[in-house]
Structures are given as structure tokens and as C-alpha cells.
Image (cartoon, rainbow, N blue to C red; front, side, top):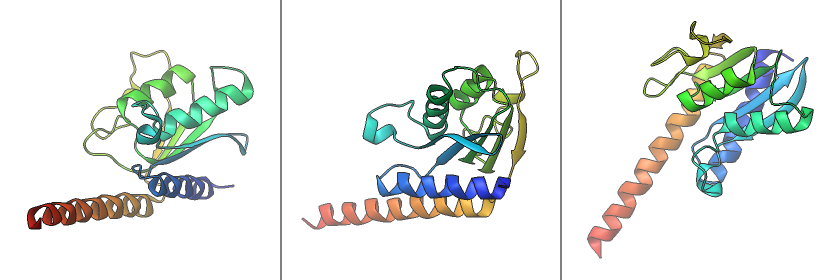
Length: 161
């Protein structure tokens, strides 16, 4: 499978998050073309601020292989990771990060910060950005547009009561 194939899988997981009322972000962790873990945002449903898609995928993979280190693995995620997730990737020794949409507010893989390639750290990741970026960004934009419309409609309803 190609980077695009794995990103399509992550996009499908992001849709699962959206169906649960979560911000649509999905992630898959792969080694030697084998899926080790997958995840989608579940912060709201699990009442866990750390339940980001990347965190879920990494936890699942580590449990599956019985090791907290994930060398020679690639993490595919639909949105550029935040600093928490980027730090987790460094600590897990993930080899490669592939992401779709950039996050110009909190991205920690090159947009705002570059935690995953910080030379002072004892591990840096290879980074490939922009894989199916338009599709990933559209999925997120549509979600937030719909959410704003729903909030506006709810406000209008409250005002009319």
C-alpha cells in the first residue's frame, strides 16, 4: 500500500470521529505494510484530553507488539500533530510521520513548532506533509463550518424563545 492508501484509511477513521461528534482526525500506525494500530479523536466521548487520534493509534500499536518503542514504524494522520502528540512520537521512536492537512494554529511538525525534528532531542522523525492535504483539509473545514452553522441556529432559536 502507498502513503495515499494509508491516508485514505486515516480519512475513513476521521469520518468515524465525526459521526461521534468529535473533530474529524484519524490516524494509523504501520510497520512493514502491516497495520499495527489505528485511532480517531475521542476526547469528548472518553472525557480524556489526551485521546487524540495519534495517541489512540500509538497506544493500540504498543499494546499489540508489547513494546513502548515503535521503531521503523510510520504514523499516518489527517492533521498535523499537536505538541503533545509530536512529543509522544519522539518518545515512541516512530521513524516516519506522514500527515495531510497542516495546522497553522497548533501544528508541531513544522507549521508552528517542529518538535518531531528538534535537533536537541535524541530522536527525530522523517516527515512527509501534504499527502491528500486537500481532502483532509476539506473534511475538517466542512466539519467546522457545519458546527458554526449549528451553533448559529441554536443561538437564533434561543433568541426567538
